[in-house]
Structures are given as C-alpha cells and as structure tokens.
Length: 305
Image 1 (cartoon, rainbow, N blue to C red):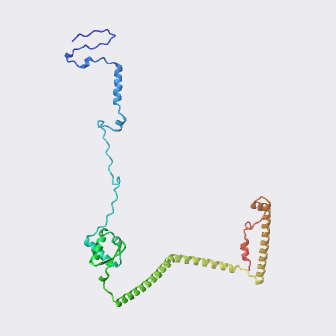
Image 2: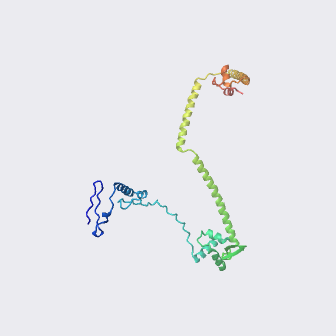
Image 3: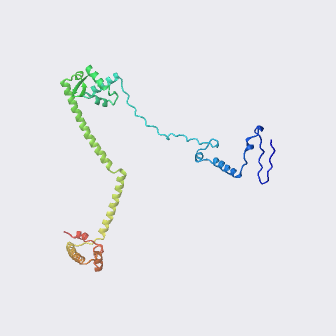
C-alpha cells in the first residue's frame, strides 16, 4: 500500500488509496460523507418508513395484527327465494281416460276441452284432454258435436238406463215433496232465527232484577210525594178555580201585548242608532224574561184553552 498523505489540520483526512489487487472493499474509494447528505438520507428513509394511506387502511401480515374474522352468517342474513308452487300431479293415460269419463257421466252435460281441464283442476294435461275426448268419442262413451271451431262433448245417452213414464212420475212426486219439506224447513229456520234475535235483544235476569229494584224505588218516592200533597193540600171551589184561570189568561194577554210593544220600540231605536241591542237594553234598563227567570211559553201552557 502507498503511505498516507499528510494534510494540514484544516483539511479532512482521506483514507489511503489501496490498489485493486489488495482485495479491499469498495467503501475505501467512497467520498467522505457530508452532514447535509446524512440529514437528506434520514429524511428519505423517514419518508419511506411512513406508511401511505393505502398501507394504513390495509394492515400487513408483517405487522402481526390479526384480521378480524367475518361475522357468522345468521339465518335471516340472506332471505331464501320463495319456493315455487308445486304443480298438481298429472295422471297417466289410463287414469286420464277414467277421470274424464267419470266426470262427464256424473255431470251429464256438454263441455269443451278447456272447461273440462279447468274443472278437473289440471290433474290431466291440457294437451292430453282433446286426445282423451276423441278416444272416448270413438269408443262410443261420448258424443262430439261441432259448432264452428268449438267442439262440445257430452255422454252418450244410450248408455243410460231408460226410465219409464211411471218412474218419472214417481220421481217428480218425490221432488215435489222434497221441495215442500224444504220450504217448511226454511220457514222454521226463519222463525227460530227471529226468536233467537228477540232473546238476544231482551234483558238478562240480572238486568231485570236491577230494573225491578229501580221501579220499586221510584214507586215508593211517588207514594211519599202523593201523601205530602194530600196532607198539605188547600181546597178551592170550582168558581174560584175559574176566576183564577180567567185572571191568569188576562195577565198572560197583557204580558204578550206589552212584550210585543217593547220589542217593536227597541227595533225602531236600533234602526236609528249604531248601538248594539244588548248595550241599548242595558242603557234603557229593560227587564227581560231571562233576567226574571221566567218564560212566556211555559206560563202560556198553564192557561186553559
């Protein structure tokens, strides 16, 4: 190695230059580190060390923080889709033949294939109903009658037993008797419902007892009042009563006459002044029926006609 070069104390001492063959590290050739560069590097490292917003929001595995396990799914967290309505089980070919045949024989009236499909509540396939009806008509169990594009099927009447006229008459008589019984039952039901309604509207035993006690109490009060009237009564002759009725009639007539005159006078005053009716009555000192606590209509009823 070359000897180190001595420098003045005002200069910094550099490391001795070593040849490449010496096997020294590259750090021997590095320039001297400055304090300013150290601070800039420290700032860079500090900037690098500060985590970004994304790093803050997503914790790394190295940090050693365990991630929160997701909340267990409850039964009500996800609503299950509604179950589809199950279709009615359709019948096989032989069962369909029997079902349609029995239904038409029981009803004994014409139907189209759509009506039969609806009335059987989709137990037979809609596409199978026309073929079943055609097969039954070919066998002679049904009769098909066309009206334009519409086909009606009804049972073959020759398959039914023929009823004699006497049998029909018996059936008609039985129907008449049943109708009569039905009408009698209807009238009896109406009568029973009316009786039930009247019973429900009537008072119960407890309510009847309470009303009887109340009526007895009122009767006793009226008896006491009648006894008081009998004890404190003053008898008047018929002439005296007629005279009192005549005086009452005269007094009521004068009352009506004066009352009408005063009412007309007050009306004239009100037409010629801007004063209110109540204020005018107070200023005049008018005495009304209400202030005397009496009413002309009540006393007029006491006058005999």
